[in-house]
Image 1 (cartoon, chains in turn green, yellow):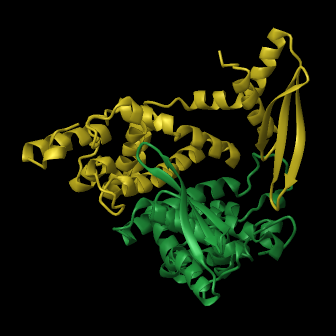
Image 2 (cartoon, one colour; image 1 turned 135 degrees about the vertical axis):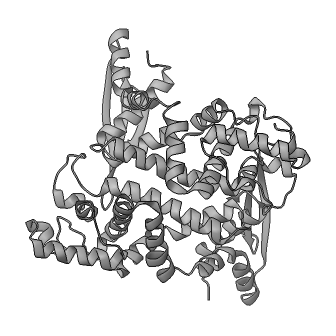
Image 3 (spheres, one colour; image 1 turned 30 degrees about the vertical axis):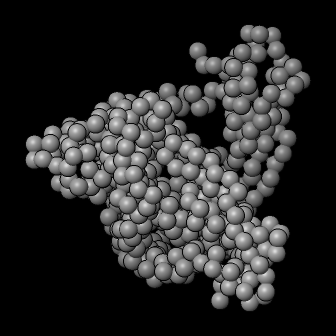
Length: 242
Length: 242
């Protein structure tokens, strides 16, 4: 943690902080207090008062902006994919573990102020939350379009392999079939339930391995339900990619 | 439904459509096909193929943009409210019923093309979905800032009373206490479970009315849990505001 965040600001500390933010975002901070707020974890304030100025409000804002930007990026990158695919890809892209990993890699650990001193490994989600708060701060300071560029160029492109995200999504069924072939098991997929709604249906699939049910899953198509069920079975049977 | 959406475009039909969109959004459509897509429900296409061009992809995009814009509006409108409040307000503001109501009032019914002819009352959510798709279309055509103005000036301000949304949220506990006073019942709130996570806790509250448990609720503060439990009890006991 940068020490000035505890002691109050000295001009040279502020310069250090501003340089660091500039390096991380590629944008020179204009509204500096909002960035300071982004790195102020509630535990640092030691206040029960939920209205106190921690970064949680910025996290709320940044989370929404991140979801939008990722929605837009995926919408434009995959013009022929349906909304189920886009939803699934987004949830994989913005999941907690990924945000924590990115926050760590861009160096947010030294910026986060917590009441417990440095952020230890047990509180990794503080880093992901700080990243969301930083996104909120950039958005307030620079608006949507520059925040989109920051997210795409500094967070997504350098750290996320979207093609890999897709392949790990789509391959559960073939993964379990390959595994079964190698290990001499018999695998069957059954659609065991269909619930019809006005404009879509929910399908429930199950996976049987040597006549025992090993996975279940629900989806808006048979294929999707089978994939979810296959993912469930892969987890239970500890089958992994590669 | 505008008839040309079934028959293909004639120049004068297109003009009618463009005028209608202009009236609804306050913005002259530039990318006209994207607005047409926004009003093309999948049932109109009669295709099982999930990759076909229905408005569902635009709905995905518009839903995300709407969430962001509402997050930003609430963030700025309530500078002293915590993220729990903001989250709750947003979910009340963008809930399905509200979107359907707004879509109806701004006249989207006549624009939506479905395979079943006009949208009947049984498929109201088609209207809310079309509104999300329209937001997606405006975003692609005009970007974030103009979409924000469209949402704020044309969808939120004319149709949503945010102060009323707040009052209906916070009053369940006092509502049940008033009711108990009037009807000579004894009401108690108990916190029956606390699950501690890294950076927050989940509280479970119950409501007892004359020693019978009438409601349960979970929240990230005791107060929130009690409100959720009170809302549950109000529903079971058919206690209503006013």
